[in-house]
Image 1 (tube, rainbow, N blue to C red):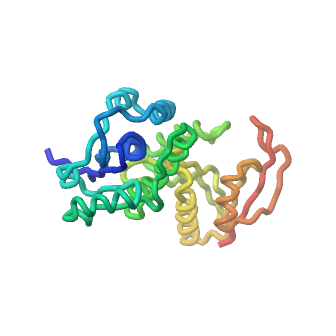
Image 2 (image 1 turned 135 degrees about the vertical axis):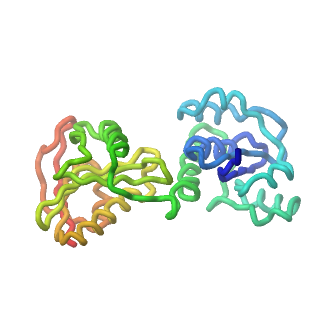
Image 3 (image 1 turned 90 degrees about the horizontal axis):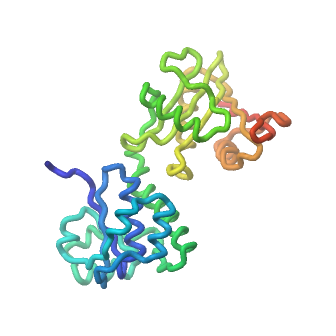
Length: 284
C-alpha cells in the first residue's frame, strides 16, 4: 500500500530534546496526514531527556512512545526518504548542506532558532511555541482550511465542543432547524470549531463561537466571522450582534479587532460564575 503521508524529519544536535518534541507534536496533531521522525548530528542511541519525558507525559503524550524512544544518528537514507527536513537552528541546516548538499532543497529552519533548553519550564514553553509554528506550517495553511454548513456529523462534534467550552451550553442544534444556522471549520478533514447564528429580517445574532483548544490562537475564529459576514452581506443583513462575558478578554479582543463596537452593558447577566454581559454590533 502506498504511503501518501508527508514525511517530515526534524534534526537537532543530540536528538534528545528539540527535534524529539517537534516529532511528538506533529505525530500527535498531524492526524495521519504526516509521518514524522527525528535525528541528531551526534546522536548516540540514548533516551530522550528526563525533563522532556516528564513534560510530554504531563501533556498527555503516549507513555509507551516516550519510554521506547532512542536517539538516532542522522544519515543519508533518512534524508533521502523524507519530503522535508526541519532543522532546529541555522547551524544544523548549514551542517546538512555541507555534508549532504544534494538534498539542499529539502532543508528548512523554524522562523527563529529553537534554543537548547534544559528546565521543564523552558521545555514547556518550547513545546507550545513549536506546536504553534508547526500548526501554521503544516496544519493551518490556507489550502487546508475549509468552512461549510454543518452536517449531522459536524453537529455532533460541535455539541461536544459546546459542552466542553461553556458553563451553560446552548441547546443542541438540529440539522433541520429553521432558526439557527451553523458553520463548521475544518483543517483537512479534522473538525476545528464552529459558529452558530440566527437571522431575522436585516439583523443577525451570533449565538456561540468555539474553537478546539489545540487550534486556538491561529485565526480560526476570525475566519468564521469573515464567512458569517460574507453570507450576511449576500442576504442583505445590515447588522450583526453578539454578547460576550466581560471577563472573556480573548473573545472580546477578537471581536473588537474584527470591527465589532460595544453598544451595551448588562450587569450580572451571566451566572456560574456571575459576570457582566457586553453587547456588540457590527454594521456591514
